[in-house]
Length: 129
Length: 368
Image (tube, rainbow over the protein chains, first blue to last red):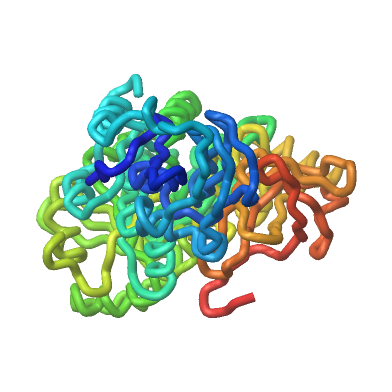
């Protein structure tokens, strides 16, 4: 599995890609594969305030329901509304089309405490499900 | 995972075909290949092959087998026909279900297929109750493999591949084909709601025969595709087939679980007195089908409510790939079990509207 190196990760299997002061986030392909076919995504409302570690919503699959956590503080500026009718987009392309929300970060360098692609890869290798 | 996991003879083939392997009842099994929904739909329209070698396969021999099996099984097996299979429950004296099994009458022996999770329990139960009777037990689970070929195209494909017309083999019948010292047993059975077979073959033959059905990773068969336990679960829920640990358990009896058709209350078996009493007094709970609003899935143990009253608990739920709706089975108070009754089901932290519908959710050749 290839883990894109243009972004940072959380050990709870979310990815964060920064562009200016807006951070796009989603869940990793590894997490999507583990969940199996995703059937429902609960999205937050635009404008929702997030603290570090807050839940942004839930991703539900045939097998399980999993919470999605934001590793950064900020406010939601956009949600991927296409996921409402096509939650399987996360399975098909978790790192691009399957993005979940965009967050305007409170701090200047919101990703500095997050792990790199290489660190995330070793995290999933050392913590098999 | 504390215990060493068992692998079926098809383990390497699953890995070759890109399966995601998970632990299930002590076995390392494929949960999915192409994706649960894709495999589900493929089974409903074409032909899928499932490895079900993890299920227990027991062989009973001896003069007292019929009487013994009649004593431990809810189903009446008196004068069971050679070549037929019988779905049955094995229960405790209080009616609690120990397992659901398929009992097959061979010429010189009897076969039992039990759940992987209950193999040790059922083996000990048989050992305990066969004392003093002419009944010998051999566990053939590891020396054989079992695959299920399911879907509307299965019969024609079987004819194409083997040259033999299997359509004369009726439901719940089986045929035995001797290949040298080995035998291949084909059952017209399944757990998907589709037509098809379950085939038991010697373990060593499985990695040779199954690729003849599926092809290889680079040259897969155009129609026959592998499917995993994930699709097996969504298929059986649509067909309202009970699963041990969900609809069936030691905490529930066969009548409450809606399986009275496999119980003969007029014969003597372990659990008969308790079930006769229940039957006379009337059941307090019933297994019903629920159709939920929206796409969210009700999970096992989720509460079922009418206004402020708790009326039951979900046993299984999924988003039905065939119907496109969220479906569940639940045990509810008998007074609240009528079709059309509206309820609320706990989904995540919320409650979702639902109504009681008839079972099964899906029937082959007809849609509700």
